[in-house]
Length: 387
Ligand SMILES: Cc1ncc(COP(=O)(O)O)c(C=O)c1O
Image 1 (tube, rainbow, N blue to C red):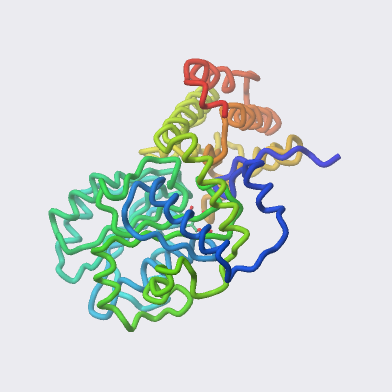
Image 2: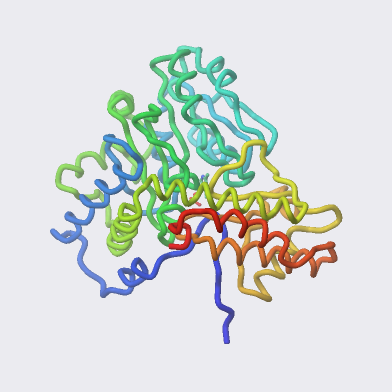
């Protein structure tokens, strides 16, 4: 029999049964009142979970579509953006700017570091700066960025500059109330905190950001044109064929998140993160980032052991999928995600799988030590962690 899968990667993440049931429904026509009703509900649901009144546009495509849309529609000729690059996803932001030959001022940091609000404010002082691009969570290193403080500092330095946040992995699991923190553009993807398979990407656009978009009519984009997408919004339609079955399933996932309550969702993730950290510490594993995010835990591979060996054993032998490092970090770090539809029991399975993998690779491990440390914390947590 095939192994029972437990997916603990930072996207895709696990998909609840209620959502999978929606995906199994027969195909249906997208230019219909059914779609328009769903798109309206999805956008309203996203506004609630993102805690914003800004428009939310949903594109059919992976999270990178929202990144591209949130860049090419914003930074026009003669303007530039401050972009933080401290991992693979910062590098992707930089690549998009380079691809479209847009002005950029890169704040390059060592992997695992988070930017200081002051250093971003300093760079944002330049009046040519149209926007500052940061991550809520840099998924390749597990680092969290302090969006609230960055927003305050950047606005004080340059009130015209927009704050653009890649929340593709951080969204939902990590608190980031967009309006309260002054986020103008927020990018998300369906396959992480939003409890869906890959295929949808979201971008919020604040009124201040719309003004910039309106002034940048020649933006080099077709599919991800924000002006084109906005034209269809009053009818709750999309300019191109939407992945309508995905929208339907996303609507169901949003209902589940709203039933749980977005602040409870944040608390669940914070509890899981604390338990994960207690577990890896008990196993003698060192955290990789300075400031760890709530949606995944990234640890350094112990001396002389490749994380890839631990990950392969956990997956092949037990059906537990953890993530390796990306790019140059392959084999050097292990990433245990606790995002989206993840419960305390899923986390304990992940820690148990790491223990098996470590033992198999020759490390000294006392079985149950990481699991027990996490259990101690989870035992005190509210029962919602066991959803
Ligand atoms: C922070 C971050 N940004 C961007 C992306 C790219 O998203 P996608 O692979 O959905 O295009 C990811 C994917 O893991 C991510 O974690």
